[in-house]
Amino acid sequence: MFVDRNITEVTIMDVDKKPVLFIILAVVTILAGTLATTFIPLFMGTASPSRENIKFYTALELEGRDIYIREGCNNCHTQMVRPLKFETARYGDYSTLADSAIDRPHLWGSKRTGPDLARVGRKYPAAWHVIHMKSPQSMYPKSNMPPYAWLADRDLNTKYTEAKMKTLGYPYTAADLRALEGKTEMDAIIAYLLRLGNELR
Image 1 (cartoon, helix red, strand yellow):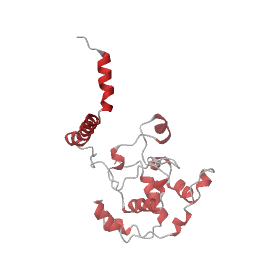
Image 2: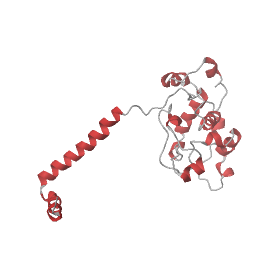
Image 3: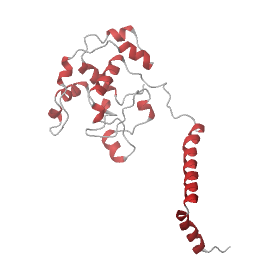
């Protein structure tokens, strides 16, 4: 079958000169894209990971996470290692759905002023974190992270801990809540940092 390429090219190029036809084609294209991205996922099943093997936050870790958010740590640190060679070489395994299955809100982030913390719990012991939180420059002289030494002097406020645990559906006992007595905000945030990267049982 013979097709005259010149006729085809002229017809395609003339669409932009016919505003009504152009609008109709644009609307059809947008509707097709919208329908595809809206309805196809409905038939693909859920992308939520099973919570069976995931450890829920302890009361201390949950309070530490809230301090992490309150102090704006998530503004400078991401918690999502992308599946790129240079990232996995530096930060460890790439992130999976299980890593943030129980997080509300998610703290993936998009800006890295400091390193990614998704696997930091596997990397350093508690003593390292204490020194680093008190004086980041003692570990990394060029670090622009401010010191958080004062967290060690602040008693942990546990007034709403039980309500948070209930709301999020995390298991806890009265003993877990009593174990928070005498803890500082430094204890809590370090417990949270040690948890990162250790989500599975």
